[in-house]
Length: 127
Image: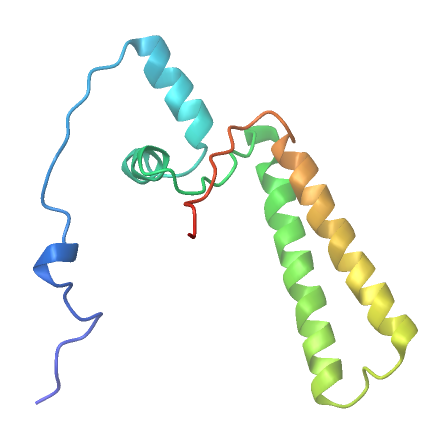
C-alpha cells in the first residue's frame, strides 16, 4: 500500500495553533488591504509583525503587466540556461546583452510596483 501523499506533517512546535484577534476601524482595514496587495492578511500581518521582508503591493492597474514581465524574465533565464547547456553562451557580448535585458525587465517590474509607495520592512538582523 502506498504511503500518504503530500508534505510530511510539521512538528508540534512549528504548527500554528495560537490565534490573535485584533479590532480595526474600516479605514485601518482598508489601508491594511491596500498595503498587503494580493498576500493573505494573516501572512502579511505575520511577516510585518515579525519584521520579515514584505513583498510590495502591486497596484491593480499594473498586475497584468507585472505577470507578463515575470514570464518574460523567466523566458530570458530559460534561453540563457539552454544556450549555456548547449555550449552556445561563450560570446561575452551575448551574455552581457541577456544580463542587461533581464536587468531592464526587473527594473520595469519594480517601477510597476511604484517605487517608494509601498512599505519596506527591514529583514531580520543576521547577527
